[in-house]
Length: 76
Image 1 (cartoon, rainbow, N blue to C red):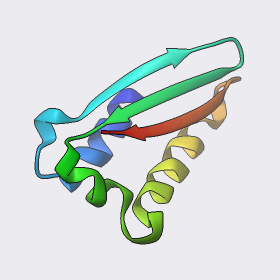
Image 2 (image 1 turned 135 degrees about the vertical axis):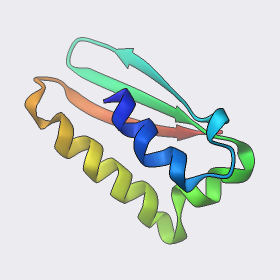
Image 3 (image 1 turned 120 degrees about the vertical axis):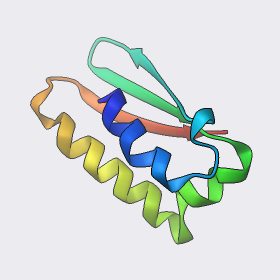
């Protein structure tokens, strides 16, 4: 899943070397914390959050086979 997020986000940003995905695993949930360069936040979020929503949709769909709830946080 971490690889999937990086594969989706890196082509969107100007600083792909700054893209990092951290995984926080708990009992019934997995949180993927995506951090990008400060200048790339607008590109990852998109107008009215459309790009971020699309990324979350793909990640959630890919994670339906897991027994845990999946969350994606986007940080600077």
